[in-house]
Image (cartoon, rainbow, N blue to C red):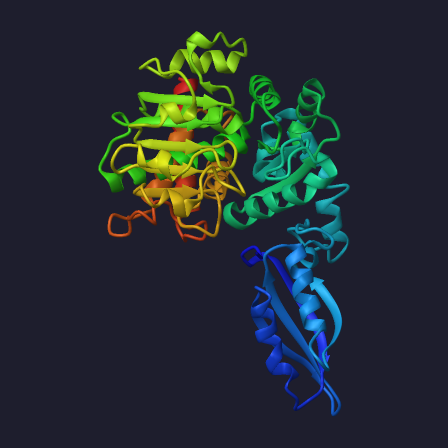
Length: 468
């Protein structure tokens, strides 16, 4: 069985066919018979003896694309000339670049942008380093830092292979937040080395976005950098996910007419994302939550020595449940998974409370097939773009950093995260809200602006309080 076609495995096949024959008509039917989708058919050139055609096709994966091309080669009179992977073409030379804000047209321009005029700017900053925010790119710059140890869906692939992901992240910062972000992929997975390296380059940035660093190291790295630096440090795998989960859950509970302080939540996954989701939900008013990991329900009776698990045991599971994930699910109002595929089935969801909410966020394969979850749950969300209600960090981090940079914030804490979540949730109007629309699209015209405004307001209030 072929996987479902998607745009990330889109190819363009250049081929030649005789004019006036039947080969052109066979192209689309052949692709569809092979399980692909033709998204464009363009005649690139025409000669008396041949037509040159560019056929753009969505496939399910690389192997599927190869099978489609083989099927095209088998059509009589069709000559396949070239196959281009559109995603690879988009990444040729990278997806970001730098640009000068001022044209260097003459010697005067050069003298002000660079030497000798720049020396006056350096002297001003030497006298007051806060002027770096006003007079340099620092005011609008974020470092996107990764060691490539936990790249989404790919695992520990290292810093070189992580670079395309960090470039893409930088492109999202620019597109949705008008922020200049720079990918910094570090060739070390040593906690001390990462902390020292980020601290050493921090003067050039107004914020640090940690990305795809494995747990539990990510917790210590973030904690130590927050203690050491006077700029916000944000681990998107933790806090970005948590913010969007809180926003989506607020709206999902509106759909099923329940409240956060009354529901019982089962959360599976005690890593970076799971722990951050837990902390933010508790900060937002959740009272009854049970956390499960690979060893079952986390509780004080397990005798965990890991500091994070000990904290979870002390702050969750008020009913003293024990056993496995499946033991904890009956009667639960909400399931949130940030763990591994295939952990629960439809029968498990059927045992949850009426009006159940299921967030199966393991990516690319969720904890339960969404179609199975929908048999019994009222609201279902995933981390995937091919299902409704995608929990997507892109809804959060551009606006959060935009607000933090505009406020000249020095750190980031729970009230800021909650403000971001509430802004995202509020983008879904009452008349729009339904079981298949609990979070706005990342292309919603207002979402990033509203998040930025809310974050800036709360961050400025905190700065005033800390200075008074």
